[in-house]
Structures are given as structure tokens and as C-alpha cells.
Image 1 (cartoon, rainbow, N blue to C red):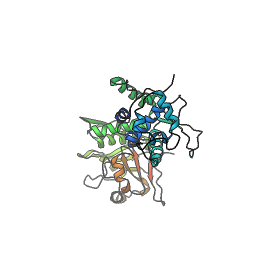
Image 2: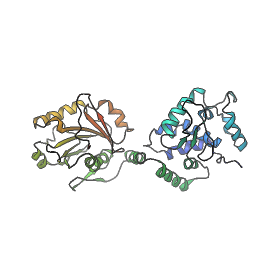
Image 3: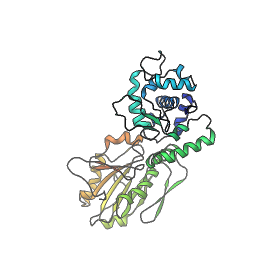
Image 4: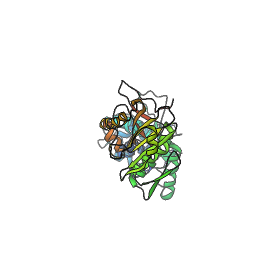
Length: 357
């Protein structure tokens, strides 16, 4: 008896991939396009699944033909596993040309399915070798069983995501769902001092909530909120008493960012000017200069000032659109990867006060 998986056609694989890899998945396009479906089909077709001691190479994908793919007997599938490794054994109706080898290997596999753990690879095969090395992670391959349907399929997908996708990957997927669907009602934000504010629902408010409840505690020792505004509410919160105590005046008519945090732990308080970027408007050089005019007038040293542009995720449209506008000597922070910062260093000065050592 063969250990080949049950036969499934490429169309069903293509249909299921967007559900398995929803919006927010790292390099999602590489994982859900037709070439990904063809690659997964080839692995299932020849039995290249974890534990089966059978492996696929890109050649099994680009030498596949519609005629061959329609042959579902175990004998035909095992024969193709071996014959595809030989040159010129198939006719003119191949799925792809030989030069598709690179996008299969570099995009669909390395940057897509391998990266997220849906496909595994033999470690002892040199990267320059043409020897087959790829195989499906067992539970992932099982998601394409044609008899797995309805709620059983949905439950299996959810279980696979929880067990095999990283925490950051699941966060991306969750956050992407929020940004796509929107929210009803209000979003409750808890300030470092325990006070709460309601923000109108939407991606910007979700990001602002993460800044105040996560970023502030993660990177500041004794955080406080001096200023909070949203796209539909110029002033959600303004702490004039605290601002006055540290020597700065907050004027709603000035070119202020969405959030101003202060770290009260250092002898000289640290001010963090934060722009929430759902689609546009990061801390650019123009914004940086405008804010420096405010802090210079208050006689703050520029070593006490940091600038942060905050995004949902590195894959978000907002980041891709605005990354070229980010000011030097500023930071970028992503809700989906909360323990990391991008530092825009100008090669001369380096702001380190924000990072806990």
C-alpha cells in the first residue's frame, strides 16, 4: 500500500489558500497565488509530506502538465515523482517554463510557505544542489483533504494557525482583520495612571490604544500621557498641569502629533512625540522641525526629545506608502511586533534614551 495522500485537484487547493492564509499573513501573495497552489499540488501529488520520506523539487512543479495532473492513480503519481527529474519527458502543455524555477524556489517557498512553516526542507542538502528537498508540514497538508469541509475545515484551519503560526503572525492576522472590517462602538483606552478614555472605533484608535497600553510601558520607565488626539477629535486628552510642571505648553493649534508621552523617571524628563500612521502622515522632517521649535522654545535639550511613527504592521499599506518620508533620528514601531523598533539613524547622532539597556 502506498502512503500517498488522497488525491486533490489544484482548484480546491487554490480555493482554500486564502482562508488558511488570511489578510495579514507574512508575504501573503506568495502563499495564495496560483503558483503556490501548483507547488502544494505537486507535493501532495507525489507524496512529499512530512514523515513520508518523499521530497519535491521545483522541477516537479514546472514540468507538471494538465494531462499528468488529471492522472490520479497511485501508479501514475509515483511514476511522475521519478520521471519529472528527467529532462524532456513531458509534452508541450506544461504548466510552467523552466525559468519559473526561481520564483518557485525564492518566492513561493523561501519567502512564503517555508518562511511561515507550512513547508519544510531537508537541512543536509546543499543550497546549490538540484536534489529534491521540500515537503509539506503534515498538519498543513491535511487541510487539503477534499472530505474535510464546513465547520470541520474551519476548525482544522484555526487549530493549524494556532499551533504553527508564530505569535507575531497571528497578531498580524488579527490586526489586519480589525483594519479591514472596522469596529462598531468605542474603544476603551487605559492610561498609565489608570484613567480611561473612549476613542471612536477605527484603525487609528486601535493603534493609539496599543501605543498607550503597550508601547508606553515597554519603552518608558514612568510613562504619562501629555496629549492624545484622533482624526475625528482634535483633543481627546490634554494634561496641562503635568505639562506645566515639566515646563512645556501644549497648544492644540500647533502642529502637534497624535500622541505625546513623557517619561518622568529620568532627572530630565523624556518627551516622545508619536504619530499614528493608519494610512498617511508619519514623523517627517517637516514635522520634526516644527516640534523642535516648540521644545527649543521651552528650553528642552534635543537629547530629551524622541520621535516615533507608529504603524499596524510592516506589511501595512501605510508603512509602504510613507517609509520614504520618515525623518532621520526618529523611530518606527509596529503594533504587530511590539518588542522591536526601527531606528532611523543619520550617522552622526544616536538617540538611545528610549531604549532600555
